[in-house]
Length: 102
Image (cartoon, rainbow, N blue to C red; front, side):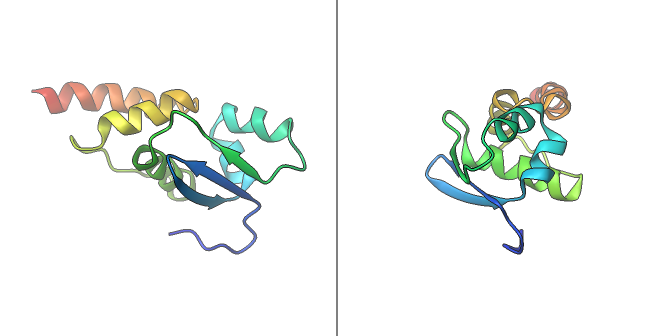
């Protein structure tokens, strides 16, 4: 999905590697803004407790400004968004859970 061109960070999430751009992630999440601000030289980060499937949706959002919630992924997206301070996606997941339960 993302070209490796100019990627400056590798995120290790649930056994998978995601290449990304610090500026894109930091613009979308205070968690990443704080993480990157305090670690200028570090290029590899392990995001413990974050499901890879949910994180993939967050990455999709960061780069496209859209994402897809489904009954099969809403819980994992919610966990990833909650852990990484994507409050707008957390809210969407809460609403999505309500819709999917009916």
